[in-house]
Length: 399
Image (cartoon, rainbow, N blue to C red; front, side):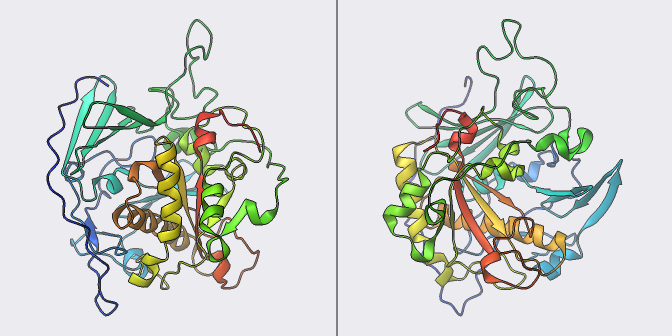
């Protein structure tokens, strides 16, 4: 990328603080409300001036606390519920929370949030600028690395990369059209084979406009020929070697083409092409997305595997998924699962040094129960980790 300012010299950074005693209530990191900001066609709020600044770190596990209309931190679902604002546009119900938006259309419901908040956490500086038809957010870290996120006019992710102090660039996600796609005349108009968000200007509002269906991919479920215990790995019984092998495993079935991040997030049969790790030892209090100090330390094993995989290939991308059981309201479960996935990603970065830009998060509520039951079940209240690099690149072959 051209025209980026030189990185400032990295300052001396103190060692991260240890977890607070169990008797302390860890203060959360405050996230300003974007509820009043206009939604982009992609379904995320337009960037505000409040977002163009770093977020001060908090105690490990405390997560993010959105602000109420009165500027108070919201730390539990009971408090957050009263802040929702619901409207209907066409056939889509839109539920705005202070820092998230839920979309419901027919039998499909999704939740959207801005992942740049995680990158701003503990940053040295945040810069937002306009370049042609693109919006560029650059987060400067204390070590001098710069995380660059490029979105198009509609709010869709075009590109994400890490710029190192020596000038090298590591491309993490690239949703731009590739040479040769669409023939000599270039890509055809419309969403194209990679779907909404593939390339600047190719999407015209899949969430607010075209409908939720534009974000989903119609693919057949994979044929899984490997043993189930290697396809769905549970951390409680997994060795470090098995965790690493799962986090670097190829797809279980062939990948037809590259897919956008949104297509991967919202298409379960597509995600199921990749093995996953269930963090079955990590638990949350009812209605909360904060992790206690004892739960934070339980993430050390998966963090080691992630860091090892990213050292091997700095372009790896991992999806952190949040899931709930079937008890409670659908909106509560969807929001809670999305926040819990984000809290896990924050801890992996803050406490264990997993690069934030190599992680992406998404909550699914009760939509994909591990054990089909309407009752409360610990196995369904889970966070999972899945390698999605082959789905983004479309280059890997099945094992």
